[in-house]
Length: 212
Length: 391
Image (tube, rainbow over all chains, first blue to last red; front, side, top):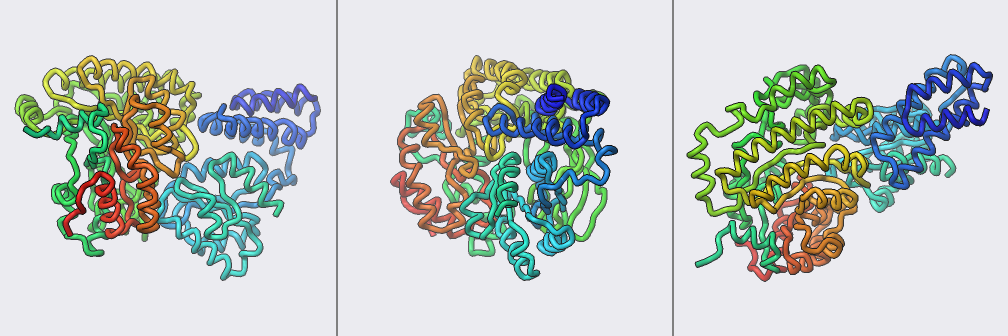
C-alpha cells in the first residue's frame, strides 16, 4: 500500500494529472481506503510541492499543475468519499477587497488552501465589507482572507475588519491578509492576525491561525 | 560647448558622471493619470496634466521613445469611459482589434480592448488595472490566427514617411530608446497568466513557437531601425515576477527565453546599442543575474515591497548594472520624514557610484500628495546639490 500511496504523492508533486488519476484508480482497485488515498497519497504530494516552493525549487507553473493534478485525484475519489468532509481544516472566506480587480494571487491562495484541506469560499474581486461580513456569517468562517495589489486599496482592509467588529463577528474569525504592497507591519497596524507573502505561506499561516 | 542631453544620458549609463541627477521621463518618472488629476485639486498648476509642462516643471530629462515603430508594448491607448480614460497596454499587433462594449453593470464595464483582451473596468476609476476575463490566444489554432498580426513587414508597423522620421529622430538632442518587446510579457498579454503558466507544461512547443515569432519580429525590425536611426538604448518589458520571486523558474527562463534574448541583445550590441533595459515589477533577485547573462544591463523599477535593494545590487554587480527606481512609493505616502529617510538611505550612494536614474519604484500612485511629491523631488535635488524647484 505504501508504494501505491507514494506513487500518488509523487504524481501530485510533479503535477502529472494523468498519472494521478491512474494511480488513484489502481489504489482503489487494490482496496486502499479512499480516505487513506486522500490523506496519505494526495495531500503529502501537495505538501511536498509546497516545500519545494519554499525552498526555491518550484515556481508558480508547478503550483498550478500540481493543484490541477490534486483536483483530478479528488474528483476520482469523490464518489467514494460521499458524506466525508474532506475540507475539514477550517473555513476561509477569501476575496480581493473593494476597488481592486486583481485575481491571480488570490486564486493561487485558494488553490493551495483547498488542496491542503481547507474549505474556501471565494468571493471574487472588488468585494465590499458587507459581502465579507455576510459570507463570514453565512459560512461560519474561521478565517477571513483579504488580498490587494494596490496601495490605494490597502486601507479598505481595515474597513472590513471594522465591519466584522460592528457585526459582532470579529472575535469569531481570524484575519489573514496579503498582496504586493502588504507587509507584516501593516497587518500588525490594522490588527490582522495573519499575513502571507505567497500562496504556500498562506497555507502555513492559515494552519497557524486555526490553532490560535 | 555644453554636453548634449544624449551625451549626458550615455555618460551616466557609463558611470562617467557620478553625482549627476537625471530624472528621466517618460516611463521612469511617471504617474497614474488619476494622481495628476488629484494634484490639481490639491493646488498643483492645472498644466501639470500636460506632459511637456510637467517635464519642464520638475526639470525632468526627456528620453525619446521610438513609439512610432510598433515593436513593443505601449500604454498609450485609451477609451473614454464615463468621461474618464481607460488607458491600456497594447502589444505590437497590426491591425489592432476593434474595441467593443460587451456589457455593463452599476460599477463596471466589460469590453474588448484593442489588444483583443476581454476586460472588466471600473466606471468611476478606469485608470485602475482591469480584471482580465479572456485573451485572444487560447491554443494553437487561435495562435495561428493571431500570429498574422505580428508580421515585421506590415507597412502600418512603420512610420509612413520613413526618411522624414529618420531625419527627425536623428536630429534631436535627446537620448532615444527603442522598445524591443517582450518574451514572457507578450505571451501573458496574449494568453493570460494562468493559461500561460499551464501552457509551459501542456504545450511547451507552442511556447517555443510563439517566442520564435517574437524573436523574428524583433530582430527583423531592429535590423531595419538601427540601419538608419540613432538608437541610444533599448527596452524590454516583462513584468515576470511577483512579491517573492519570478513567475517561472530559472530553468524555464534559460530554456525558453535566454537563447532568444541573446539573439536580440547580440544584434543590438553589434549595432552599438549597449544600454539594454528591462522593466519588470516584482522581486527580481533571481532574475537579474539571468538577464545579465542574456546581455541586459539595466533594471527598473526595483520595487521595494518586493525586496529589491538597489544598494545591494550595486555592491554585488558594480558597473555591470545600470539601475533605476527603488525609492519606496510607500515612503511618499507616509510624509516628509519617511521620504527623507528613504532617500538618504540609498540615493547619495547610488548617485555617487553612477549609473543610477532615481525614481519612485513604479508610477506614482494617487495616494501620494502633491506636497509630498514636490518634497520628494526637492530632496533629490538637494542630494545632488541643486536648488529647489521654483514655487
